[in-house]
Length: 184
Image 1: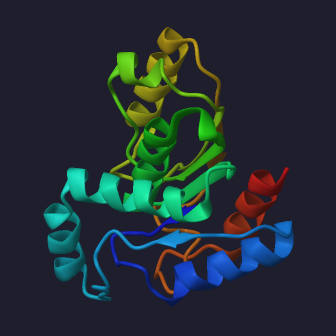
Image 2: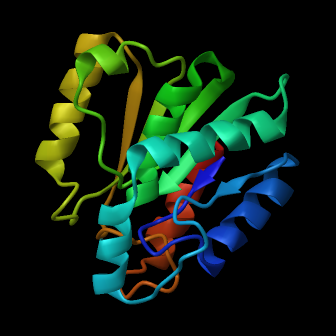
């Protein structure tokens, strides 16, 4: 299950869904938390992100899981806004989730919630990120340890959104290396 960036379910995420489906030979659901709204304007993206109702987003995710079927299990992955939602999806779907990947997403801070995780978490961290910075990551590491959960942080000498080819901060080598870490 893939969760989109703050831009919405755009071509980048659709391409990622296609890539991972073919690379792993699995079905991939790219979940739309914005009800079809997509933008390439940062101000509009910020408004879309702020307007995203957590209760509605959770209902969409639960609906996607139900669509996948009773016997489905999941791996979650998201970027930026979707990185945070990748972790929230993992918490929401409980033991149906077998792995969680967060590309530079905001982590959950509530240790009690983190204690309910059923899978390991891989966090792709952009060292030059000023929003999901080293302090945010260190706090997440501390909280995951307190929760007794497994977290691997892979650090890349890049900036936020480095994996998105349409981003001005795109870093081809870091994106390639991060993808290899995710596949491993």
